[in-house]
Length: 158
Image (cartoon, rainbow, N blue to C red):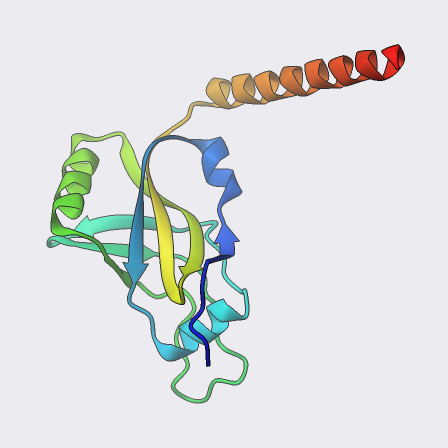
């Protein structure tokens, strides 16, 4: 059987980019059981309520929903269990310091497979205020309207 190549995205957290100001991103491997991997390969996962934290020099991912594998037996995994993340020690220390300073949180942005290995993209993020969210929506809407006007003007000239 040929080894997998490339990147296959399983789940993304689009709401995180709306709710948080992303400062830095990190890639981490995950410690998973067999049924979790099979469920992820089937393309089933949700990052909506997920978050990561540093505890005792280790990084953990919590509240990420990976549903039970349908063909699993009595040794199936629990869907929202705490999962250990695999990162370099200096990255974990850096993240731990930033989180302790306050105002920062670790949010999962994307769950994917790279060359057959399950990875998660974590973001060091600060929460946005409501007015920041409204301003971002307004800017996006203004840009969309400007692009629409430019394309209408081009089509009119043809």
